[in-house]
Length: 288
Image (cartoon, rainbow, N blue to C red; front, top):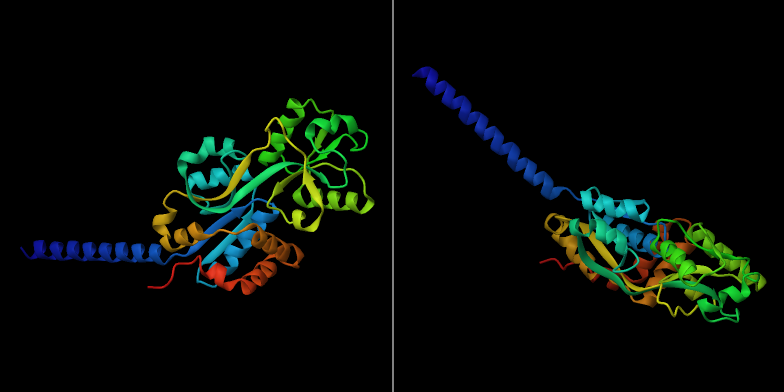
């Protein structure tokens, strides 16, 4: 009988310890505030992601950000390895990624509703349509200056070359290299055609225009905010913040310009935050 009582006490102690550990584990999960936000190396994605980090860090979150190609970003979200993505071009430009991973990802906000893409030239170039490009192959050097091959606009430009029968090749580079090529050509008043999109700070900085796209190769999109499954349940406060996170075109250009002109993107994002506190703080849920 004594032995049975001792065994019962040991079992009760083990059960109590297990409950304590379970409660501590739950509390730890509730207190965990680490958030991972990957972003593509595009000016608007860089700017918005750094703004989110600046604001949420001072709210007590530990926000890790990292530049990654868009395909791996969607894959990471679908597996729960990343938390949030602020620069998803949907439903069209990133449609292929959404087809593959969309059923495992949640759409929690829209950062900018008026996303457009296409072929862009300086306004002094005397053509207005993609259909006219083949008449001026030599003036353009037979090249369309593009960005990374993982971007949806890269794929759509290959489609445009095919559908319009263009005697051009797409030069794969980066957003930074593309802007540098545009700026260099404008300084010399040379003809250049690039892959471009809105929003982008180049529209505020240079006098440029889209070429008309009568075949509709380049679609209109929204810049949506995506999250891994379960993110809203784990971080309801942040889900509300990203649900409210939206920038008008002029404010987005202001943010991108601040980030572009700063020595460190964090400094540029912080400058925008300091100048627009009411806007950014208004996205965060008010304390009850």
